[in-house]
Length: 337
Figure 1 (cartoon, rainbow, N blue to C red):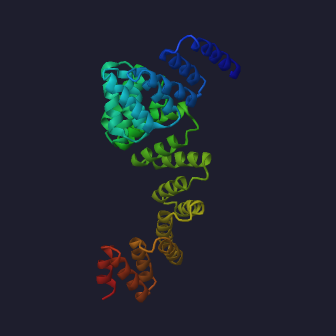
Figure 2: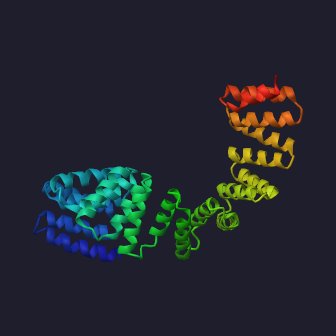
Figure 3: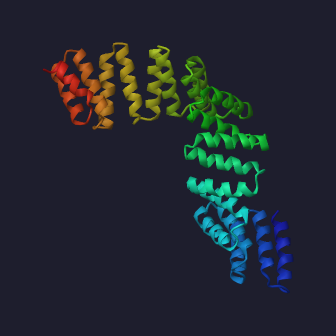
């Protein structure tokens, strides 16, 4: 491939001896871009712009090349210059929208894709990208409409299903989201996040057995992710499999020693099984990680009350109140007077 590129560039170098027009540098830059040599392409486009700073195309191509190099901020600058030269050139908005999306400028990206769609209403990918921006803006209703439009125009864009399913799950359309995640898993059977998100939707639909199965599949394919164990533990608590939940919380802590919520939830679950000393250990571990965790003081105080340690419980309730735990006031009034 390198030989092909060298031969092509050699031919253009010969032509360059006869012609110093900007078209030469633009064309050569496109060849370099085709071979993913974006830095060299940018060098040619720099020359083309110096030779003719009012030509829109070098700015467009340089912006695209910079985007490929993940230099999105510089790419936006080029697209802005091109738009000032030719504001009705809709393709510029498409590429600027992509760069803005990568820069997390979701409002700007949405506006760019809207301009492009107005002039090109049958390009499926533009709706998909605008849907991405709208989903990030938590405008889920409009995002879902864009994803549905994408699939009507091009049902082969498989990655749309995940984005649409996620938007529906965030929009509390859990049953529909499950169906869309089914489609994602059909296309991508090893997509870990699809199982996790489908499990969440099933949980919200009170399909706890289904949620448990999905979390287990997700854990099997990514056994080093502490969150998977935490969420499966939550389901096990709901199903009253308390020891199974403790095992999962313990695994989550093993993978992330600073996972405060797993310590707290494990402590609560241990207290459900009357393992009060174990619960105290977990709340104490939480306090060591975060000395200002008011919930842990309040919960440890209550366990100490159950163990008839009045001094210890009241001390914890007082500390909880100092840290802003309003429920601790009621505990003090009830148990420490």
